[in-house]
Length: 407
Ligand code: PMP
Image (cartoon, rainbow, N blue to C red; front, side, top):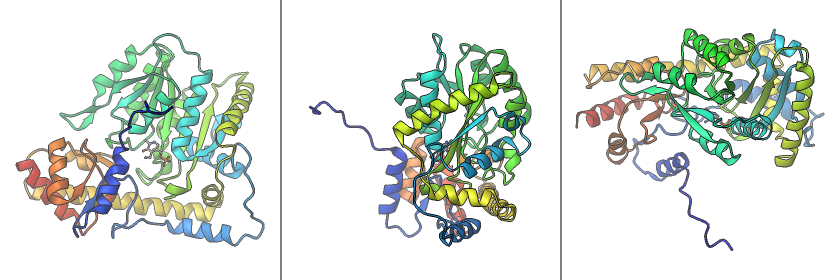
């Protein structure tokens, strides 16, 4: 019965990881995967996560029973405060609905599923994602039957934001279109709008009745400042938007495989807001129950322990600065070395871009050459994961870039 099933391509990123693993060259460099590495190119367990792990492991009151459908309440409430701000009027007004999800991916999916089922869809309405975006966005929305459109985002000539393209696209999107926005540390480009640009985006979206869906996978990881990395979301809420948020704890807690995340729906302010929130919550419960029944417990406990303890929270902030600080230092080291080598082209974008990734501007043939001749692995679009750089390999990488650019 399945003779006609077509062969699907392997996931490009996971394929890249496998190729890196199989490479036996001693100076090989992995700039592919978006996971933090320490200066020894090793995964890093955050010291505060180790502590929270101990606390939970030694707590005799804990067991492995099921969580409620909406997840661990101490996590979801702290997660809402983290992204919306402790003094959020939306939380005080009881118009925020928070569900624990299978990390950020599950949160985007739950939001997509909810919107596909309940968001009124006039003709021509699409989900607009940035061009480029995290590749999974395309398939997550397509899988629930929502048509995808793209808004211009990256301007190749400046390796920065395509502001005219972005604003023109929002101006022409059909009213009630859904706009997927990266809250900070845009993946894959590392290019974020400034606060002034966010204000202008909000103004257009309000006027054009566009619906914001924020994806926040790097809060605190991007700048080391949790509030700064949530600024855009909080601004939109201040402006009275109804919106969705997909929140991941993979990067900022280093809990990748634990799959800890949350989906939040924020109802528009008004007399019926609390009632809308309750009804949305009841539907999210059905969607969650039918797909995962209830979310995984362990990573949720660790994140919750840290978020709810003021002393541990402080330690977490220090760990976030360790990660973001090392990445900023690597941006500078790579930039300095390229300047020193007088590598053709401008490289300011390496230090201007934010977060885990940098869009280098390297072409596909250059990327291929880096892999074949230098054993340096990155995605075809020239994106590099800054966390793959360290004090031992940054000079090697810079001189390899220099050579492929000159060829
Ligand atoms: N959104 C974006 C933009 C991301 O970069 C990521 C992580 N690569 C995610 C969502 C979700 O990742 P996870 O499911 O591991 O939390």
